[in-house]
Image (cartoon, rainbow, N blue to C red; front, side):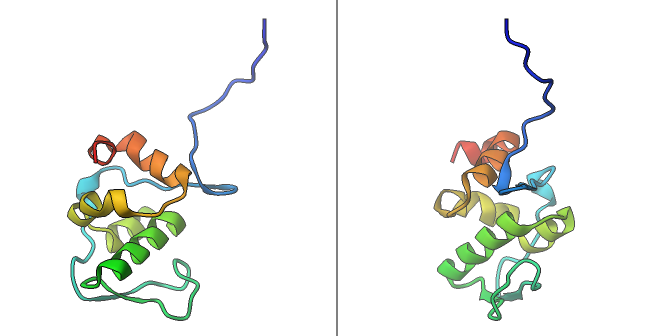
Amino acid sequence: MHDEPARGPLAYLARPHRPALVARTLDELRGPVRGIVELPQRLMWNPHRAFDLDNHDLLLWMYENVLREAIRHDELRRFINKKILVRVWPELNLPDGVRRAWEARHTALRAR
C-alpha cells in the first residue's frame, strides 16, 4: 500500500511557480472590444504595450499576455471580454496550464 501525501486542489501553472489565474465567471469579463488598449508594464514587459483590438493578431497577442501574466481578478475584468475570449479561445497560444485551468472551470471554452 502506498502512503501518498494529502494534496489540495490541483493548481495549474501559468509558468513555473505561478498558478494560473482564472475568472470566477465569464460574465465578469467586460473588457474593451475595440480600439487601442495599453497594458501596464506588469502585464507586458515590452516597451510597446499598446494593442489595437481591431487588428486580430494584436488582439490575440494581448489576450495571451493578460491570461498568462494576470495575478489579480481586476486585471482579467479590465482587459478581457467574454464574447471575444470565447470566440478566439481556440486560436490563443497559451501555456498548457493556463488553457487547462480555464477549461476546467469554464466548460464553454472546453467545448470550443
